[in-house]
Length: 238
Image (cartoon, rainbow, N blue to C red):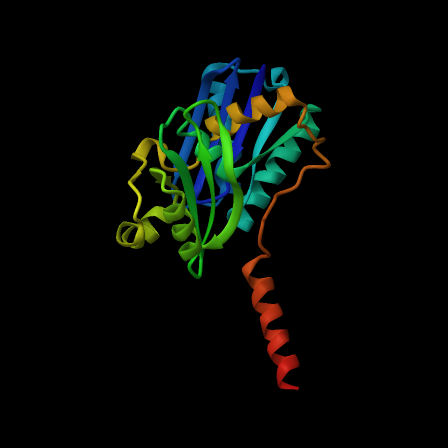
């Protein structure tokens, strides 16, 4: 089974090819460039490097969200375009799930956190020691509520994601359970994890056509939320 993975939910841009549980190639960049400038050239680079024929892939796994609205749209559009051109199905892989899958085999509970601003994070809680299980599905929540939930669970936890540098001081101060932070090579999104988790979904038949695929934002875009708040304020003032 050959799966192409695409990750663009944050500053990270990443593409990968996984073939029968072997990571054939992966190109990951965590730098301030628009994903529309990076994803296709990166894909072309790894395909050329390994002499890979994209017609042989079985499906395209796309990190579907939550995350950056612009990044998710670009990743979705890239996956849809390739799917239509190659006549291949798409696999929607929840971003937070794929991040947790980076730490498959970890004995601690795994808690990815993506900064959603205003003291909010995109997060979830996972157990990866005996297989991969979802304790808390990916969601947007207040950091204070997440800390309370982790403290009440009483389990050791390992964090990863771009929310760590933003909230690390708070976590160190307020957590009452044992915790640690993932090392650099595992602490951000990777298309290899998207592709491998996507291969599991493929076996389960969790596929959609290229035309059907769409991102899963979890929250409305900030501009839309601000507009709704402004309209609500105007209505209250009238």
